[in-house]
Each structure stands twice: as structure tokens, then as C-alpha cells.
Amino acid sequence: MLRHTHVMVGCAVTVAVFQPRDCATFIMSLAAGAIGSEIADIDSATSKSHKDADRIATTAVAIVLCILFMDNKMNMGICNAIRNNSSYLRILIGVFAFMGLCLYGKEKPHRTFMHSLFGMLTITAAVWIAVPVIAPYFFVGYCTHILLDLFNKKKIQLFYPKKKGICLHLCKADGITNAVLGYTATIAVGLEIICFFVL
Ligand SMILES: [Zn+2]
Image (cartoon, rainbow, N blue to C red):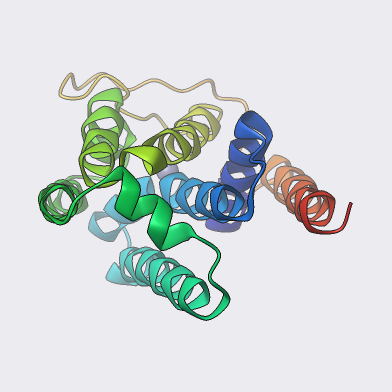
């Protein structure tokens, strides 16, 4: 699937699964779901160009900075929730582990480490070390990416480091299924936002 579809499905499913009740949790689930749902494709730099990987890394950093800025201006309680749930040492260790694993995955071939259970669990563990409360949202977003890619006609090494790849051969990454899923998930995210803030 393409990036837009991954992100929208990741956000829609994460919010639907956790059904956040307060603003801080809602924003955190959307952001962590979005980052979790696209981070796996950071390895596409090894098969295409570095542009995709750079865009993913830039988007992830932009999301984090944007949330910190909004929280500072609107006092949504996100920084407080993170502060109460973690420590500077945990954040430092977790962020270094996260970056180290992503850099490792970025250098591996597309659809290998970053698209495996091993990769998903170790990277989620790094997020958990940094800020435990965010890890479940990130994990669900990541799961949606792996599940969607399994429908593709190209194999992923789900059980990396085992070389054998698997896929369900059901659709092309940029075909009609991708478009339908992308639009449906975008509408779902829109409805979730409206339901949360308006209703
Ligand atoms: Zn992928």
C-alpha cells in the first residue's frame, strides 16, 4: 500500500481500538498511530531513492514538534502525561534505541527487518522504554502496516532473520484496493475527529 493509505488506516484503527476519552490521549493515539503506521517503510531507501525514507523521518519529527508546540500553546496535557509516565533517562535511552534500530533497518533491504515481527517488537520496545503510554498506539499503527503489506503481491520477511518471505497475493500496492482503503480510512479518521471534538 502507499504511504497515505498506511497512515490513514493506522490512525483510524488506532483511534477505533483505544477510543480515547481525553484530548491528550486522542492526539497521542493519532500521532503515535501515524508514526507507527509509516515507520516500516523507512527501509524503502535501499530499494528506491532516499526521498521516501527522508520524508518519513521528516514527517515523524514534524509530528512530534507540532504536538509539543500545540501542547505548549493550548496546554492539552500531553507533556504532563509524558512526564508522569517517563523520565529523562528513559526518554534518552528509548530515543537512542529507536534511532539505532531505524538506522539499522534503513540499511537493510526493503520488506525485511523493518517489515518483520522482530523489527516491530524491538522498535515498539524502544518506544516503550522512552514513553510507555505511547507504545500501545505505536504498536497498533505498526501492526496495520504489516497486515496491509501482507495483502500485497510482493513478499515481506515477516519472520526475519529467516529469509523466506510471505504475502497473500491479493492486491497491488498502488492499485484499486489501495485507493479504496485510503479514501475509506481518510473518511473514518475525519469522522473520528468530528465525533471526538464536536459530538
Ligand atoms: Zn511497507
